[in-house]
Amino acid sequence: MVARASDAFPVRLVKIGGPPADPRTIAHVDFARSIGFNAVWIHGQDAGTWVSGRPRLTSDFRKFAARSRERGLALWVSVNPVAESKGRFAFSSADDEARVVRFAELLRERAGVADLVVSFDDQPTVLTNLSDIDRYGRGAAPAHLDLVRRIALRLPPGMRLWLCAATYCDAHLGDGTGPYAKPFLEGLPALPAGVGIVWTGPQVVSPTITRAQIEAARARLGGRPMLLYDNFPMNDETPPNALPLALVPLSGRDPGLAGVLAGYLACPMPQLGASRFTLYTVADFLRDPSRYEPKIARDRALTRLLGPKAPEATRFALDTQQIEWGFFPRDPTTPAAAANRLHDPAFVESFTWTVARYPGRIEALETLSDLPMRDDLLRAMRRRLALGRALPLAIEYLARRDAGRSDAAEVLARLQTELASWKTHPEARAALESFFGAAGIPTAPARPS
Image 1 (cartoon, rainbow, N blue to C red):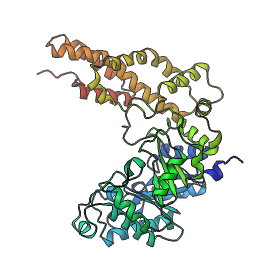
Image 2 (cartoon, rainbow, N blue to C red):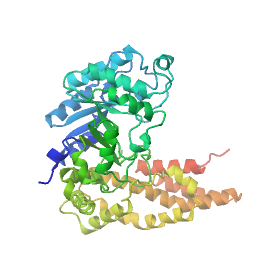
Image 3 (cartoon, one colour):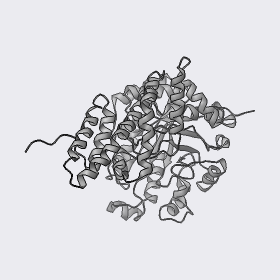
Image 4 (spheres, rainbow, N blue to C red):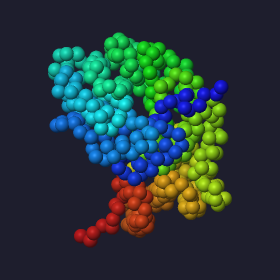
């Protein structure tokens, strides 16, 4: 019998992607639910506050939680003591510990949250607080583990605890002899057996993840339940205003993962609408991993986004754009970074096709039936088109300016006119302003002296 989502991946999480009261966030969560996700991952700061004063949940989060319960969506909340306290958290402080525990109680009692993640991802691996150093030494791993152990003993009934350590992938763990990895592995058995592990796979951003890799990692971590935090298609290291989007079907995931994971977390881009393409394919994998084929999932996702009555020109435009942006990880080049590549002929030439083809492609995609997808896609395309139109002028202006030519002002005026032409598209205008600033191009005419 083929394993399906209901038993293969009982927990199918998606990141909330924005403030809980934002209509775009609500639309994203509703979409995810409609295609088979059954849980939402939320960072602690989006749920409330516990760092100082009395811990509390925000009214927006409480409303979101009630709405989620009505729709059968479980909530997972991730608390990062170091990041949320801006480094002021003291692991040796009973008061700091108590505030985290009280926050967990509020999450359970007033929002029905059953899963709490204590996270130290991307946080310092050495301690700076003198009391902490006196108690644990300079390394942070014993402090991290001790806090999680103490919280586990005080959690309210019905709440499960998960740990995302500073070491959260195979590459971090290495051979187990590192200054964080060694005490982490040695101290992990002291945690209650039910404390699960949040893991990103072989790497922070993993091109492939196999069952054997997860089994090996779980064995090293004591056989604990494991949640796969899959940085696909989003990686936090990619700037939100990178020129391309990631329109890529899920690939490189072993169907056998279904038998060794407690759950799976999908991470959309900040462009939640455009993330629908990949999320469709992730949902297909979670639904039936043994039969999943990226190419088939890709075509199915495009068909769903287009709707049944899409004109042929729209179908061709979306198909072409997905091919252009169908790479993972995506190119992290931002408009500002593009200013440093004006002497790269291949980079500059890559925008020639953009200027020639994007206007017609944008016009065709205006009829896309999935409006959140359409809006995110067109914003990103206009951003790239604006930059493509400006690049030749920028190169010419800078050459004339650096040569001391008086006619540089003529090209500058054309650049400023190009900037003004995007006034009805704020994202494109902001991209040009960022590019101009990095290139040293004035964004407004000089005032008479």
